[in-house]
Amino acid sequence: MPRPSIAAVLLLAPFAVAGVPAGGAAAQERDPIPLSQHQVVSQSIGWVDVEVEYRRPVARDRELFGSLVSWDEEWTPSADSAMVISVSDDVWFAGEPVAAGSYSLWLVPRRDAAWTLVLSRAARIFHAPYPAGRDFLRVSVDPTSGDHVETLQIAFPVVSGPEALMEVQWGETRLPIPIRILPPG
Image (cartoon, rainbow, N blue to C red; front, side, top):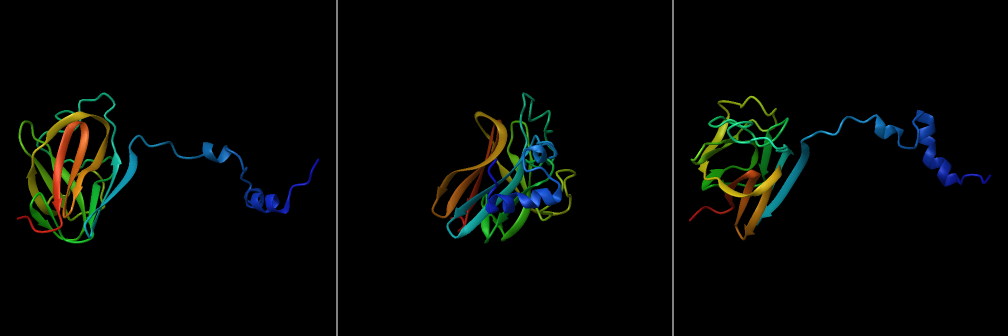
């Protein structure tokens, strides 16, 4: 039987000392895979960096808006923790000024009407309850429809010069949020 090389012995030594097999047994001891996966989306708009961090809920044949997500109540488009949006410099969300920093993002879905987009000063928090009294911004945004998106996602389908369109997409619902790095006008 051939002797293992010194490199092989040095590679496996930490596992032998710790009493942990070098094979797949460690994988069996991991936590269960979460249903809502973590995602970080980043987009540069000119000199401004925008980063969105959230956990992606899955539709799984459920009725989404008006059932799983109540009409006329604050909801964060994330599971387990609130969606966080960070901007590296001052921007305009749907025409309203937003200072550089991190905010939790909330929506108030409305049946047959414009939705309310809320940025809260309470940035890194659980997904419920809504942090009342911590609003930085409230602005109306009109939802649109599109092809079914099974797992909630944030996309930047348009980035052009000083502006971009960020969309919250889930089910057949799209919520376009215009972002500018220069004052509207």
